[in-house]
Image (tube, rainbow, N blue to C red; front, side):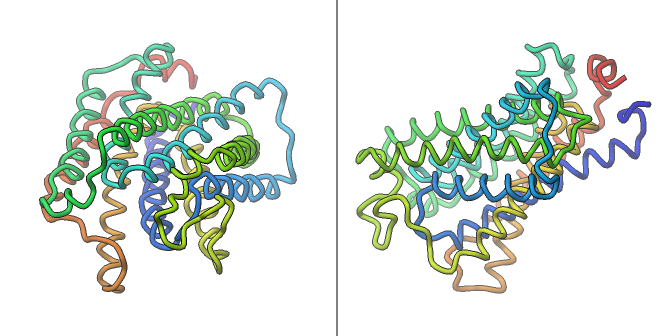
Length: 331
């Protein structure tokens, strides 16, 4: 019996991947509004630790076979790289710069699965990914001059931020591949132990960063009024925020991505990252409509062309025949 053979099974995979990235897109706007002054590494530590406790409590701390240790390690490492470096990049640059890197994840995934021999590349998939990437690039690059001027950074910070975002996207792609190698095991247990490893790594990184004055100045600039002076400050009355971040931004999308990995090729799962800018834009419009004083900007009307390209790219990829290697592996 194969999961990939049924059309309804593929629909489950596509809907799971789409739902996961909509959660990431929506959650990013809400968390960005409510987070306040907090170290990005400490934020990532709370997020990973909360998710791990949620997953592991649900499975009563189920122990997985020793044979899964290397894959769990790779999943946890990818989670740590993806989450921590992304937040660090946003801290020293802008959300606009961060957005343009998200649709590169399918490209990194396609590259990784190809060199690892997990999938056979096809012209249709490559074309779809490139079309979707062009759509996302147009959304974040075609902006009014006024919005770009406020987001300018010095060239040194831009270079560092771009390197952080690039490595973060590679980490996210490696998570997709690690998930595929862990199919057949409890998805909650897999994500729970990986998230616990991620939490340990981020807590250790937070301690090391907060102990270094130069790094602390990057994480918590002294010029920001009410900022996180020591790197350990947590905003008051943030319980609901963390509950939202842990459940809606972490537990649900990670679980959905694990489900998607069981039905789709790795490149198909990753291509849905291009849905994040759309979800973020729609959420921004709704928030601004019902909360006019909210400190967020409405997306520019020019993004409609990018949305069209994104959906065109998705259509090209999801209608591509499943790779021969992917079929054999599932059989």
